[in-house]
Amino acid sequence: MERLHDIGEDALIERITAGLSLGSDVVAGAGDDCAVLESADPAVYELLKTDCLVEGVHFAVDSDPEQVGWKALCRSLSDIAAMAGKPRAALVTLAVPGDREVAVVEGWYRGLRLAAERYGVSIVGGETSSLPDKSNAAFLSITLTGSVAREACVLRGGARVGDAIVVTGSLGGSLTSGRHLNFEPRLSEAAWLAANFRPSAMMDLSDGLAKDLPRLAKASGDLGWRIDLESVPVENGCDLAAAIGDGEDYELLFTVSAESVGELRRTWAEAFSGPKLTVIGEITRDMETPLQGGWDHFPNS
Image (cartoon, rainbow, N blue to C red; front, side):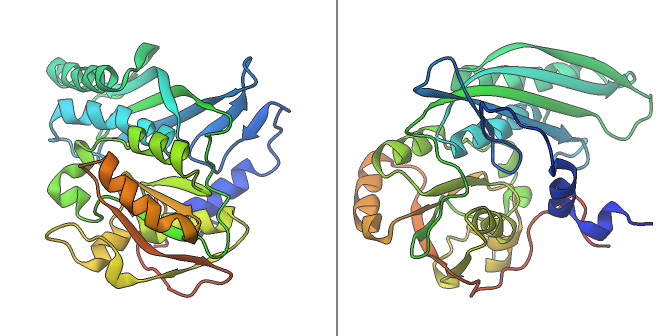
């Protein structure tokens, strides 16, 4: 009997979403960082995103509760950023065993509130459910709405042969450093990019460069890539393998025309004092640089 570990996460998603009926107002459905829909305003798209945070998978049982809440909302915010969007409202679903300490759940919600206040999100409701006592895992699920100007929206499927491949920040070591719990989604950086350079494709780096770059290339028409491995921005204390394969960096991965790279570098340095910008390669017709690693919820056993 075929098991999930036999096919992996991406193949599973392809199977269960194949043939889904989509309305005429759907601009982008499953397979991008957010769903994109037409809105009442023809100049604005509506964005929808859901993400879950599972204890033992996305955070440890002894993680700081406030940081867990922060991460829960910021994961979805990072996907809104990938579309160059602006977040609006969130629904929070919580499933937790009844023997869990109240203070832990209160800590999760403190973190949620801090992130919501920081990034202008209204938490407007949700759902609370019990899990059997002695359960090994609780989970928080966030559904987030947002919007983006029609002309500013960036999908992950528009890269062209010859485009430069660019990442923000440094990659690797997110788990060991604890950065996966307290990162900042690149909302302002993505909006600036869309307004000034209109990336041809963009997504957030949540599963690692080795997983996410192939997804961007596939969405762009089964293209390939060439990576200058020496240029990959490796976080201090990490090696190249970690930078490529660890995941949970929550940086931006995007493509722009090669001709715009010089101006992009110059104006980025003027606009942002925080995350650096690094050109790591280019989009090609065929894959030229094999990449190993990346996060898969159902890895081949």
